[in-house]
Image 1 (cartoon, rainbow over the protein chains, first blue to last red):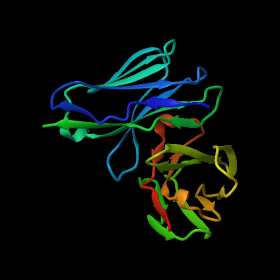
Image 2: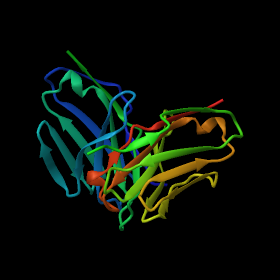
Image 3: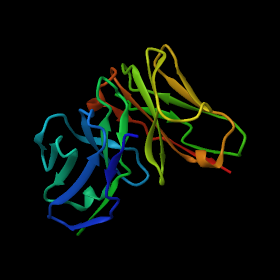
Length: 112
Length: 114
């Protein structure tokens, strides 16, 4: 069974620090990886996606992918209290499949 | 442009009943996917519809079904409700299949089964 694993947290970081969120996946066929942010009581919102090994930066967010280790991470620089949310990692099933498998999410708290 | 809308937003049903949830995608979007979110299992894929055809189905029993209309609006139905069906049901739309980088979620329907 294809799985995406995340540390459930909560992960607490002080305001201005770097938050590091990690995710591992079991399906070596997965090609595309996504990070969603979900505020309490709200629906998920896509914040980053990455397809190639290495780093991808977008503002304060950096996604990192290591396919050999089957590992994806999200770094949030200069963390703000508004970043406090649950972060969901998702992976596709490769081979043209459009189905996403989600991790259960990591709850991040940014302490002012 | 209006976002993805889902109706109703909240629903309370009793065991054994059936329920129909509706999803209207963003205008122009043709792909609709449905997900179930629970605290224990997280976000799980139910099915995907494109051009009025189910293209993908997750690992859920046959009590869960859906359809898509010619205007891309989609409905999902759950028959013979069980307590474990209590969850947030989310739909997501994208312009085309596979465009997960521009996939947007609706606000969800919170289903409670008593």
